[in-house]
Every structure is written in structure tokens, then in C-alpha cells.
Amino acid sequence: MATNEPAARAANKLSLLKKMAPWLMLGFLVLVALSLVGDLAQVGQLLARFNWWMFPLALCFTLFNYTLRFLKWHFYLHQIRIRSIPWRRSLRLFVAGFPLAVTPGKAGEVFKAVWLRHFSGISVARGVSVVVAERVSDGLAVLMLSALGVIAYPQYWPAFAVILGVLVGVIVLSQIRQAALWLLALGERIPGLRRIVHHLREFYEGSFSLFKPGATLAAVSLGTVSWLGEGFGFYFLLIGLGIQPSVRLLSLAIFILAFSTIVGSITALPGGLGAAEASIAGMLVFLAGLDAPQAAAATLLIRLATLWFGVALGLITWTFSADLIGMQEENGPDAQS
Image (cartoon, rainbow, N blue to C red):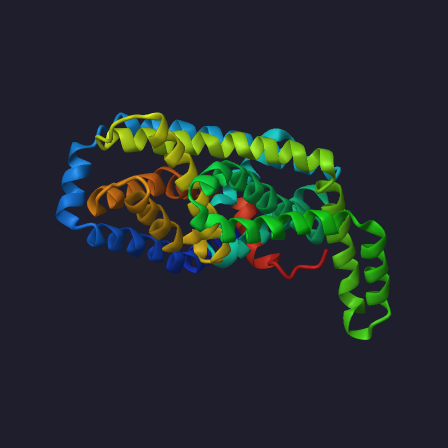
């Protein structure tokens, strides 16, 4: 049996990569379409003249974002009393989750909860609460960064208000404990819900801890600073394309990247593919005054330096994480807690 274990893990790894392949291909096609819309020849010329020293600088700002988001992830683990996972293993789980963002609605990130169960014994449902809290706190963070831009460009206010209301509503509802416990108790008396109420209770208990005011303030603060880093990275990419540096350009870079992140998230498309790119390019044209080839080149560069850089780091992590890959087939998202 032991001699077959490496082959089994390799098969599981290949199976997971096959499941990811359509979304990775979609990402490639989006980048190709973006280049074609911006005029492939002109985009190519802009990239040839691009100051490529700015690209590693942008990657450093992306790594800054990932570092602070990892601190938030590890902080969340402590909030739900997972202290048995050392920080190095926690970092490996965090980075290994990056490629899972390129799934519809980021649903693949539920595997992070499966990994947490494997290493800590915590239920999958409570682990999912960490994934949800990450999404909510990141959403609030990018909303904070885009707030000033929304004031300057009121056409974006309705979408901003709706998303802010939903995220704040999730947090507020999670803290009305008596109502939540009453609903869970009611569910236990309904035959069709009785068998899943235990999982819902585990999820709620995790959410209640993670969305407490102090924890939420700390997480959103970390998230705001981390996503601000990517905004600075975008600013330097724009400068590398020959756009004149200015305070206005910096503020637009931060706003455009933050708001496009929101747009990509609410579409539930894999990694926001298509929606985020269209949002970035469109706002660069209408708000920053760039022409279509410049907007396409800038969008291509920032997506490579953020989303696809993260996916690459995650896939590299998979190469030495056979223990994670091996449990994908065995312990899928429907695994019992």
C-alpha cells in the first residue's frame, strides 16, 4: 500500500490541475482578448518601451499585501483557537490557497477549511468561517480605499453603498447572538434541517468570534494597509509606461484597483476574470484619460503582478505540498466535520 502512495498523490495532483485547467485557460484568453481590444501591435510596442525595473517593484508591493494578509489569516486562526499550527505551516496553507481563487466565486477556497481540519482537528464548518471572514474583511478594506474616489466620482456611489450595506449587515447579524441561537434551535426541530444544523452552529460560532468589533477592526485595518500596497504597485507600473507621476495619478491608481477588486468579487467569476480587467481598463480610459492601448497594457501588467503572480506562487507551493494535494480527492468540500 505504501509503495502506491506517491502514485496516488500524483494522480490526485493531476486531477486537481485538470479541474483548474479551464479557469487557467480562461485567464489566458482574457489576457489575449485584452491585448486585441487595445490593439495588439500598439500594446506590444508599449510593453517593449515599458521600464521593466518597475515590475519587480510592483511585485514587492504585492508581496507586502500578501504578508499583511497572511498576518490577518494567522490572527483569525488564533481567534478561533487554532494554536497548534506553527506559522510556517500556516503560511504554506495560506499561499497554497492562492490558485483556488481562480474558481467560480472562489468556492475552491473551501479546501483551506479541509486543510485546517487535517492539521488542527477543527471542523470544516468552523474553518469555512475563516475563509468567509477573510472575504468580508478584504471587501471592507478595499471599500475603505475606494471611499474617497466614490465621493469624487458619484456615479459609483450606488454600487459602493449596496456592497457596504451587505458586508456590514453580515457582521452585525453575526453579533446578534440570541437571534442566531434561536434560529439554530428552531432548525433543530425541522426534520429537513436537523442534520445540517450542527455544521451551521459550528460555522456561526466561528463567525461570532471572527466578527467581534475588536477582531473586525484589526482585520480591516490590516487589510486596508495591505491593499494600499497593491495600489502603490499599480502606480509605479503606470509610471513605467511613461505616464507622468502625480498625486492625482496615485489616488486614481489606488481607487481604480480597489474598486475593480470589488467589481471582480461581486461577479463571482473565477478570480474576477473579465470583469476586473474591463473595470480597470475602462476606468483608466474614462477617469485617468489613458488611450485604449495604454489602458490595456497597464491592465495586463497589474493583473500579472497581482492575480497571476499569486497563482504562480500557489502552484509552486503545491509542488512541495503533496500532503495538501493528496487530501483533495479524499476530503472534498462535502467532507464531514
